[in-house]
Image 1 (cartoon, rainbow, N blue to C red):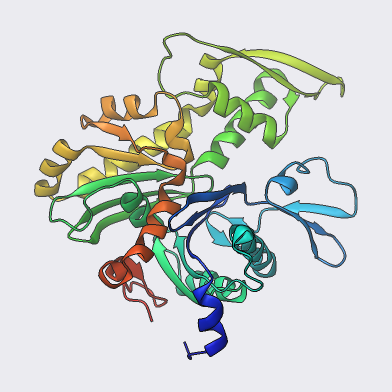
Image 2: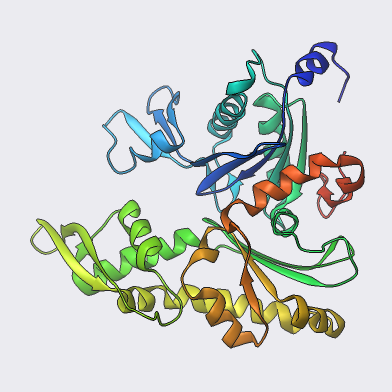
Length: 355
């Protein structure tokens, strides 16, 4: 990138930030301050002009409630950009918001953004370009499982093997690390969104009830589980009865919701089993000591770590504050860029060096 005196000057007053550009939520970590933004990755746009009208939490409030001329969309699908201009507007909004207390007229921060492992060159380039277009003076990319592992405090730079399972909104990322590199990585399109769909489908097939995405998500967070709970709970589903067409409320138990989520939970467990099957024996010996770390929002699903532990015979533990691991890990890179740059990825496929 060519040296620009203006960028350099504005950069003096700008922050170093790590961004977890998630399908469901975007988190921003600011060096020295911690997580300053945790908002849904939703944008409300004008249907005709495609101009963003509301971003983040404000836009999510409109989901399923938009007037005819407004469209509420997620510019990222399955962890990659599907709407470039809208993603750029969303990034710019978050970057500006992170600088609100700094009184910088035009923020020019250094930004590290997490990308799913195994994305194509085109998808990497899209994130890189969108970050620069949104006002960053330097953009770096890091694979999300690597960022999650650094954020969770795993010894990724050591010879000792470690494993992280990062279950977000759109994608689940699994990676086994040793000596600062990824030995095995897997990416799966089954994650939090898929679980919401499971609950919507269950309400439709078992109770003839049409419920919205937000209702499904609330139910998943409040009573969703992957293992028998010490005390099973009840929750009310509200929506439209598909037979009468009228509003209806139905009481369901956490046992029913666990059945609804059963297939997605099984898919995640099989993913971990397949990865362990391919892991070198030496690293498996390490994993029996360090355990498997769960990160991402769905890591908070009740009983998931316990269920996984029973199935794979290795201790499974949930990272501290699992939702923010990727953003924190991305931000930590900028604390010591010279030494940690080896964890970044470049723009060409399969590359780990940044150009």
